[in-house]
Amino acid sequence: MLDICKYGETVLKQRAREVQNINEQMAELVEQMRQTMYKANGIGLAAPQVGQSIQLALVDITQGENQDEFMVFINPVIIESEGSESGDEGCLSIPGITTQVSRFTRIKIKAYDLNGKEIQREFEGYKARVIQHEIDHLEGILIMDRVSSLKKHLIKKEIKKLKSDEQW
Image (cartoon, rainbow, N blue to C red; front, side):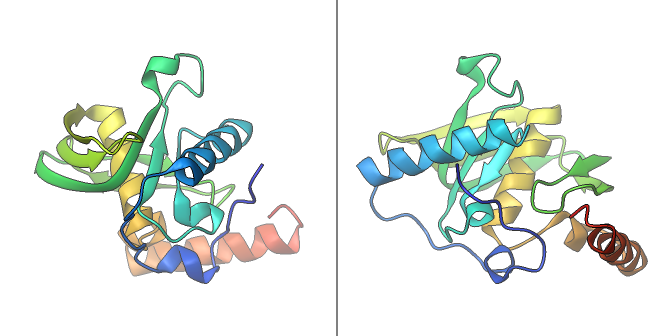
C-alpha cells in the first residue's frame, strides 16, 4: 500500500514529468497504485497523489468489480473535447470534501498503455469526468483550483475544521 498525499503537499501542485521508460518498475508502481486506489475506495488515482511526479493515471469506475474497466494512462493528453456540465467531485487527496466542478462531457485522449503502445480513445459522461480529474492531477491542478475564490476559501476553512476535529 502506498500513502496518499493530501492537500498542501508540494507534489500535488507541480506539473508531473513525462514518462520516458515504460518498464517493470512502472508495472510494479501501477499494481501498487491499483491496490491503493481500491483500498481507499477510489475510482481514479494519479501518480502525484502517491508522491510520484510522473504522468501516470489509473481509472476504474467499477472499483475492481469489472477488470475490463481498469485503465492505465501514461502521458495522457486531451486532443478533442466538447460540451460542458457541472457535477460533484471528491478527491482522495482532499478527503471529506466534495464540490461542483465543470468538465467537458466528451473527450478524446491520446496516451500510452503499459506495453508502450499509443492509444487514442473517446470517453463520455462520468468516465470522461473522472479521466479529466486525473489528468488535472498530472498538471498540478486540484478540484479546489476549478472553483471560485469564495468557494476555495470555504473549502480551506472546512479542511481546517476537519484537521482540528482530527478527521483529516
